[in-house]
Each structure stands twice: as structure tokens, then as C-alpha cells.
Picture 1 (cartoon, protein in one colour):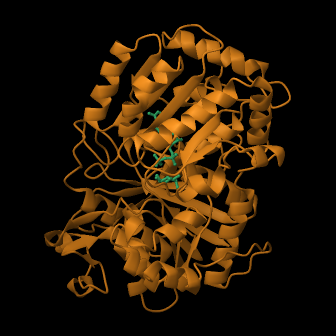
Picture 2 (cartoon, rainbow, N blue to C red):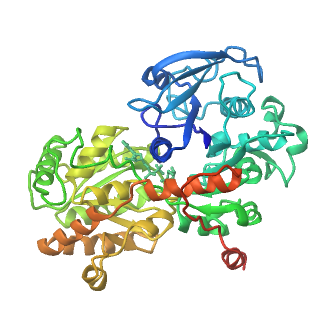
Picture 3 (cartoon, rainbow, N blue to C red):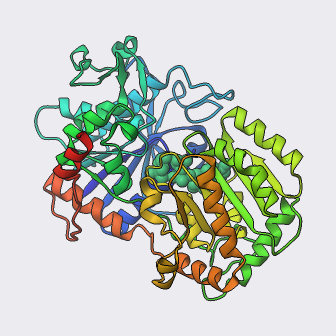
Length: 504
Ligand code: ADP
Ligand code: GLC
């Protein structure tokens, strides 16, 4: 089974969020199961320098007005996984971020940049770039690769099957219709049954509409996005694909995120002896100028600072948190207004609140290890990975019951604790009260060390490795392409019943 995995991010080549973690760990887990999986992503400067054994394998024919592109092959850092980077100085070799410039403005040519990625993916998939390999399946991720299933659908004759995964329905890649001629898609597709979305061109809609199978990253989010509340306007498109649509829960890279071996930690630890976690806590307090009090509950938050992640709610809850004699350490970047507000809060609550505005991968590890509690609330959450890392690090997560958060964290009640099922704290309301009430419950349990230790053990015993979910993807690939794969793990499609309920 040969799979071309197309993505805009893959850690450590390029990362802004969970897509990068998944685009690393899932292909590695698939390769472990005998799938011949290869990655295709844009040749951002950092990706280029981190790629192992890079070599130019093809000069790409001019396309969409881009004449400087080459295909560079290499190995995914630290693995044998083959990667191709689309290297184009015009499109990808620039400073700033993956999608935005230094000032946080979207690159004006994003439509062209990712349309080009999709066209290269289609040419690779159709064997039109001579590299001696052709996939049975193309797995396109998020709007950045959304045009790829459409390009394959256009092809006559034998072609690979396509799977499209939406990691977040809020990111749609919508552009003015005037770009249509520049992205190599015929006018005829600009229709409500095609890629037109409220008079714009939508890359996400292209992926959802034209892929042979569509997936998202948790079963609960799969049900939610069939409804107007979560579907971001695409619920109708998804409902029309209900028989080909399923939710497969993300896993985590349990080698990179393992407190027993994590090289970012001042001291490692494991479930049988978590004494090292106290060392991590003291070090984190010291590093961020927090009062060195081993008994003060230390709450962490590592996230994009956005409305989705309820960063605004955390800000409102902050005075209450400080009143409880708890400490908060925050690592994040995003909305400039929130960045500034948190920076001000640090000045006001120095000693109790630490704020690091920016992106810092090693710090994310130290935070997960050093904190007692992780705040991972969200207004919606396709899957969420930070709560899964927290569980593995014995840091009890506080989450809202939505999407993948609902699928992965079990609220602590007398019953769930007795059943050894409890792993964190779950609340329903989007308002500040819900978050505060859940945090108050967490803090009360924190003051009962024996119960807290039991909860930590339950959390650390959870298995969210990729094994089970990678098997589901392999089964899905096999089903959609007809190429046999030895392992079998059934994937439930969104049932007609769920669709009917969602529609009513
Ligand atoms: P999303 O992809 O929606 O942002 P996830 O929970 O799926 O949310 O994944 C977020 C990933 O990004 C995690 O690996 C998390 O540790 C990381 N992350 C988020 N913000 C930061 C930051 N400021 N510094 C370091 N890592 C971060
Ligand atoms: C998106 C989602 C997040 C998910 C990640 C990886 O960024 O917001 O919930 O965990 O993709 O699938």
C-alpha cells in the first residue's frame, strides 16, 4: 500500500499547531504497519535546512506562472520516512511564518502557494513527475491540500484514490473568485455543487466535495460538524458525504512525548515514581519567576491565543485563579490583543502568573511536566493534543465537553474515581463560570494528595498512542483503494441516524 501524504506542516520541518504533530506521528505509525507512506510539503526555508539527505530529484515544468520550482527529496529527520519538498523561491523561500508575514497578515499569494502544492501532488500521484513511485492513495490534509482531490477527480483513467482529512472546519482557505484563473481550476467548478462557497472559492470545500473519503480527527467532532453550530457553513456539504465520512481519533507520538525519556526535562519520571515531576515543577517556577512554593497548585496553558481556545475566558478567570493561591504559567501566541492583555496580567500578578508570548517547543514539554493541572478549554476542538500530552505527563487536564476533548478526558466524580476511569475535569458552559467551577473542583482534589495521586495514575495509564488509529487509517485506505492490507480495524461512518438527527 503506497500513500502520498500531503500536508502544510510536519514537525520538526514546519509547525504552527497540532497538524504538524499528526503529520509526523501518523505517517511514522503507518510506516511501522508496513504502509509505504511518503510526505509532500512546501519547501519552507526551515524545512529545507532540517531535511536529511536532501537532493533535487526533478525540475518542475512551469505551472501557474511558476517557473523556478524543483522537487527535493530527503528523509524525515531521525527516520527513514521519505519526504518531498516543493522548493520554489517565489512561493516558499521567504521569512515570516508558514501562512503569514512577520506582522501576522496572511501572505497575499496563499491561494497560489497552496494551489501549486496541490498541482504538484496531483502530478506526482499521476506519475507525471518521473521519480519511479506512484501512490495507491493520496491523503490530503486541511484546506492547504484541498484542491488535490478535485484535481484527481478531474483525471480520466486509472488514478489513485483520495482521502481528505479536515483538522479544523474553521480554517477554510476561502478566496475571492477572481483568483480562479490563477489556480488552474476550470470555471465550471465554480458552482454551488463545486467549490463555490458564498461567492468565494473554497479550498476546504474542494477537499470535502471531491475526495473519495473524508475524515476528521475525533468521533465527536465528526458528529458535531454535521450541525450548523459547528459546521462553519459546510454542514450541508458534509451531510451530503455522510456515507463516506468518519471521525478517527488522533493519537500522540509517545516517543517524543514521554516523561520517562523526554530530553527537554530537568528530570524525567514515570508513573511508578513521579518524584521527578516535583523537580520539574520547582524548575518551572524558578525559570518563570513564580514563587517557589511546592504546594501551590501550578496550572499551565499552552496554546494558540484564540477565541477557539477560550484564551479570553482564561483572562477573565485570572483574578479568581490568583485569589485561590494558585499559579498560572502560560505559553502562547496569537491574537495581539490577548497577547498584550496577558503580558499586562503578568506585570499585575507577578510571582503568581507567568506569561511567555511566543512559540517554544521545549518549553511546551517543560510546562507539561512541571504543572499539576493543564487548562485546555475550547469553544470547539476537533481533537486537541495538549490534553493528551498532559495525561501522559500526569498533569490533569481541565477541558470543555466538545469534540476530541469529550472523547479523551473523563470527568472526576465519586463514581468515575472508584471505577478508575477519571482522568481530569470536564465542564459544559462556554462562560467563565463553567471554567471556574471545573478549576475549583480540580483545586479541591489537589488538596487531597491521595486522590490526586490516583487520578494521576489513571491519566498516565491511558494509551493514546497512534497504534489503534493508524490501523483505522490503513483499513480505510484499503477499503477505498481496493489494495489489500493485512490488518483490519473497522471505521464507523457517520451513521444515517446521526445525519438525520443533525438535520432536524
Ligand atoms: P491546535 O492544533 O488547534 O493549535 P492542538 O492541541 O491539536 O491544537 O495542538 C497544538 C500543538 O501546538 C501542541 O503540540 C502544543 O504543544 C503546541 N503549541 C501550541 N502553542 C504553542 C507554543 N506557544 N509554544 C510551543 N508549542 C505550542
Ligand atoms: C487542528 C485542531 C486540533 C487538532 C489538530 C490536529 O489544529 O484545531 O483540535 O488536534 O488540528 O488534528
